Length: 239
Image 1 (cartoon, rainbow, N blue to C red):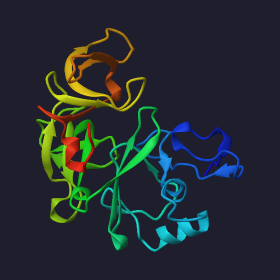
Image 2: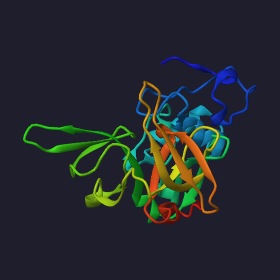
Image 3: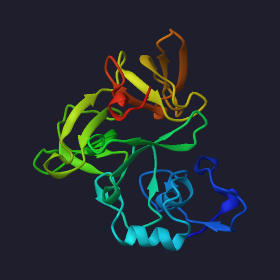
Image 4: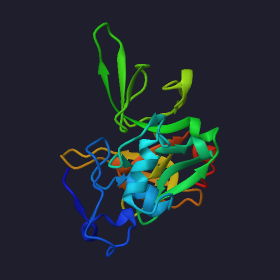
């Protein structure tokens, strides 16, 4: 795997630049190149380890669960709305970004860590007419054909509830959304207009916050988080 120079690592990683020449690179996966390798998060953000050797030991001992799956590779990338648990010490976190697009984490309860907010990338019709829901996290499951791309779902992560849809937030005017990229990162509001671009440019959307202020961003940066109010409060996030 190609190594990443510490000096050229994305600012969102929030790591010291002069400690060593190289740092863990993110593995290929559903997240883009700015995804934070979980090994860096464990060591540099959470300080659960002092070096890469200790990180590998923590992972090798199967102490880390990402979105309901045990993780053993320090290169696995994490990003917005991922749920990370350390069952042996009963610590659970949801990954977000701050207003500057830097990765941050919110400690959440064990109960809140049993569900995840996910975004639908697209759907696939399988043999027999079943609908496969493909998520931006890279996961997929057989689901309801009424769900559409860019909609958000709240799904279970553990046991018999895994991939069971508990909430559905359509990508539609009138519903609540949060912006996860660009100059309006982490602003929330009601989606008031979808501007379809008659070109290769991305569609744009306009959101309105509780104070009546409107702001515009591209469609890809929008993540639906509720209908009449933000569902993020379920995880203790004030947004």
